[in-house]
Image (cartoon, rainbow, N blue to C red; front, side, top):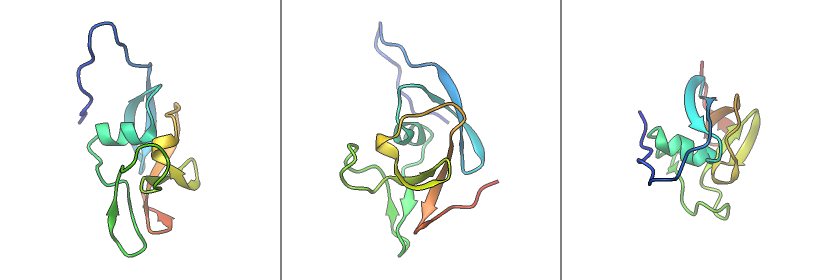
Length: 102
């Protein structure tokens, strides 16, 4: 499922790349953030707090830390500030640990 809108004339997306999210492949595009790729796939909830409260993209500029995910084994990475790279592995976080995948 993709929520990426049609682009205006003359605007092109970056090259498509494959990333892995919780063990599942996902197509993303170079030049977009991890948060953008996850939201385009329909994931409004990016993590849960230690008490189980859902969190998603809030400020979109790296100030609030609500969009923390695990990227390539590094926990607490801000999805809104991390550019997509081919082959990167992303895991949603549940409290202070990554959600199990695969």
